[in-house]
Image (tube, rainbow, N blue to C red; front, side, top):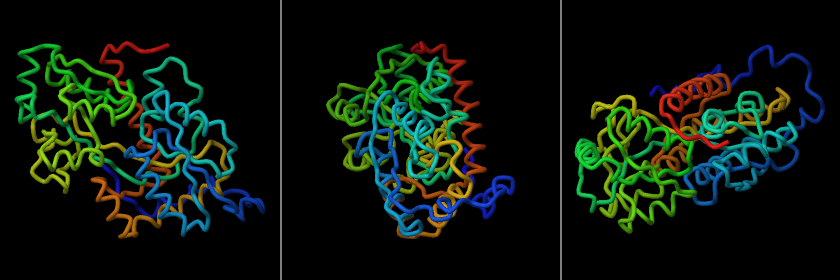
Length: 327
């Protein structure tokens, strides 16, 4: 998966957006704290990245960023809340691709329009994903897992955090690419799924690194591969799915900031410039790396292209997977 590096032009607004003089309020922005709405509960990987990045950007904006967790409905509650918030730059969404590039394909009705209700500001983090199993499952490699699934169709249980999310769709890709039947088990939160993995009540799952790093290092969970395009620094001996002959399984999850549509260009520009300065923040890069993630600031133009690419990519997966979709 190609992950673009930041270029000088991605932190600049297109000329067309800069027409017209900013109002006094826009010129003074931000004059009060900014709310950052996080669509998952406290302690999740997305939440941790939000807190770290918000703290880092505050010094460049001169105002506090106050996080509010609004979990529920596969991240759609928080997303709809931001879509309907005043477009003044004082309410931002920090999210994964799920409610912005996937939900429209999985759910027939949404309380927001992903393509029209948001202005991309910046991707801040790319979070690698690992394929992990309980050690007592008796498989130590991806080929062994595939062979076991073929020998016992439907018997391997695979945890999915939120139906219709990135992990769910990557499981569908794995099933199709490997020609296997695995049973998806939905969870509202990764914490309960990890508890079930540790308790031998769940067989396998795709998970981001932060909540399982210690368990993998101590052998309580076994990592078989990473979905990342390259091997991750924390587990250099762990192969990529591409190396194992499954290139379609290459994916990294972006965490990014979006504003409500119609937020004034001058306001978005100030946000973009502030986040752009984070790329050279070595202390932030270290903290993000400790999460098993990568600091990689992507500006609004490239962010919009990535969302469009994701929308097409995940749309094809949903269309090809014959999934039961809620109303």
